[in-house]
Structure formats: structure tokens, C-alpha cells
Length: 91
Image (tube, rainbow, N blue to C red; front, side):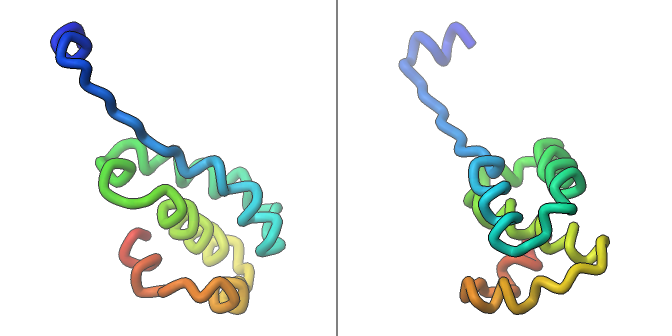
């Protein structure tokens, strides 16, 4: 850490939690908050946070949570015009 500090190295990581509550509320699946939050926490065990934009991680975790909770969110994803192929690749 001292070497990185001496090099004036900056690493900025945007977290997927920022958009989570807004997305869940908009999709009407606020009862999946705990599960989605836990799935996002699990993404920190891999380098996904460094590779993918945070909103895609949030959407992928929401998709997994909605499938596990048997919630119908396909219409909401279509309304967002989200490419489900990209979301499912993240999931």
C-alpha cells in the first residue's frame, strides 16, 4: 500500500448498492432486498466488480433473486430495454 501511495495510484470502484433500492422499488420486488443484497455481497469474492459496471451487477443479482423468489420481472426488464443476454452472462 505504501508503494501505491508513493506512486499516487488511485483506484476508484463504484459499488452496485447505490442503484439497488431504486431498482428494487421500481420493479416492485422490495421483498427480495435481503436476497439481492446477499448476492451482491457474494460478487466481491471474485473480480466481477473490476470487470463489469455496477448497474449490470445489480441487475444480474436482481434477476437471480427474482427467479429464486418466483417473481415476474420480465416486463420490467423489457421496459428498461435491458439486453437480457448481457444480464444473464453476468449472472
